[in-house]
Image (cartoon, rainbow, N blue to C red; front, side, top):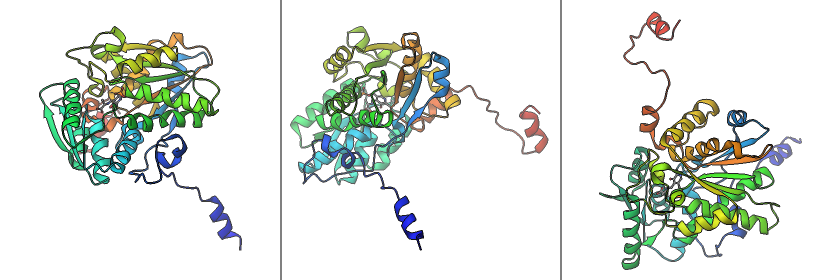
Length: 363
Ligand code: F0G
């Protein structure tokens, strides 16, 4: 009987989580107790409808990081930060967050047996993210202030009290997040020409660049992408060059006026010959709807900033170029924005009768 042999050979190795997958590129040691939810290995999806809009044989892909265990790219950084915190014997972690960091910190820290304190701007965190942090068991403090103020407080807290800071100023966060770039190169066989990415606190743009550079040095790709970062108009300090005291945008995830990785992001821009631009809330919402209704990809508003930005400056994309847009978070994080800002037919209060339903459908 050859049956058992063919079954055995067709079995694929399960994904081990990103630390195991990229161990040789990460600062882990033998005794690091890895806290993982098998994050990473997210799809790089072709976006044919976007490519068609741009034309000129441009290839467009989206890196759908909303498919991570807690629904955002933050899981990449958090598996590293929490594993290292555990290795160091931490009992509690703290972060400021516009929502996604708090969800990821809570999930990983609780799994690692630690307390999780999160500071969020009261009233400006999408519903799904707040629900996650609470259910994972974080201790949530909503301040009457914005993200920048929350970050200032948690930085001081971590200096004065026994709590480990897990915002992206923690270097292990960026180490984990750089694996997004590894996966893009592994999928394409090389770096893209452009990497379009939303920018808030500017950790992820920095991390992706670290990843591309490290893979380039290891001989995994023979070129580096231009890093194209996009901020919301009402929260675009890296575009205007001045901090924003009262940042405002519908994309609450990137409602940040004074990014912690400011200098690093500017260095990435110049080293990669990249550009930072701002996109309006209307452009963000257009890209958000377009991705969902034409590509079948539901991301959160902040993530759509990468696509909005690409479309805004698409006439600059060289013919035949390959562009990757990072979709940082899942659309389910923010159901309220989806329900409020779609253009779909939604008739309510219909009588449960065949002909009434048919009539409502336009038949
Ligand atoms: N996209 C999403 C969905 C985010 O949640 C964030 C940041 C960004 C993009 C920007 O990434 O800060 O590395 O430039 N969210 C943080 C948080 C601030 O608290 O969840 P960045």
